[in-house]
Image (tube, helix red, strand yellow):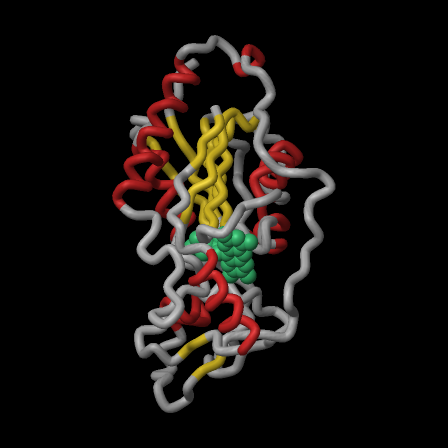
Length: 266
Ligand SMILES: Cc1cc2nc3c(=O)[nH]c(=O)nc-3n(C[C@H](O)[C@H](O)[C@H](O)COP(=O)(O)O)c2cc1C
């Protein structure tokens, strides 16, 4: 089989998943590469005009050992039409638990044919100067591994005549998936004195939780604590300073300082 094009499909509030997915695509040696960014709240209305005829690389971060619910609902709207897919989760150096298995199932339900999988490490969304967790990842070494993985996927595809020749992809994880226990009453906060009302945060928020005309106001019930607003604010006005998040970040800094390495499944 040939690979002529690749579609990069990702949900990536703080951009680490996007970087890994792009890194994998660099090893595929295809010229025609298109991105479908499912991160922003208006991504929900984007529907593909046609199915995916070639390879898809589908990436999501890990939230509490699962996929973010909003990413799942957006992925479920896609139509895979049997296209081969590489599924990728990116996690903050703690654990990815059931997320890769969940992504395999979600991709299959959307009509994709998962043929390869990877779990990579990205800087933890809760990482700060005081509580550093996997800072700067994916780094050069990670992206080198992502590219090598892309080359191996290419080899795998060009050495078969049809997808039916492949055995079903096995990935780690348990079903039923671990229960989602997300805190629902926490959002980022804004130091009003620092906010310049540039509204960059409103454009990156995946759930439109930040008020479009008053960017210092965030709806706690919609916020998914992805920290996109915190990381993108040019004035440093946003922070996630709820004591429960700070405590979690402190624990992660202590307990997850040992560098984990990407895992791939082919
Ligand atoms: C609400 C939330 C829950 C998270 N849960 C986990 C987790 O269970 N394990 C882990 O290692 N990292 C966890 N992370 C960290 C992210 O998986 C990691 O930072 C990832 O690189 C973010 O991807 P993005 O840059 O594409 O947004 C969590 C992050 C958030 C915001």
